[in-house]
Picture (cartoon, rainbow, N blue to C red):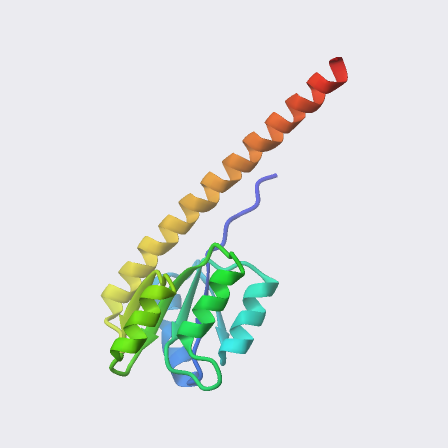
Length: 156
């Protein structure tokens, strides 16, 4: 039985109205995508530890832990998640350097241009889906090789 792939996006922003606007925009253009909202970096990290997401849209400026620090922590978890930082404020040179050092996948300014935003999400979701398919094939091949090795050992 084949498991149906449902793409998922995590929105992390301390402003509930921003989360709602992004969720509604994504849901109207990409209704097959599951959207989950977190109101803080800590809540978002907890969700990422619990389950897999294709993408995280993370606000840069949040209290306690900013989006760049959250992104670094996600990378430490070795989760195959595409990270897009979002900011409605000018970004300082120090923040730009931190973003580059953190190996962030993309950066978008608010207010969002709906067509550009959705276009980037479609490209990212297509890439993530292909990556998942590729990884599934690799795991299947590794299982087949392991079974063959076990069979050879049993024949010797």
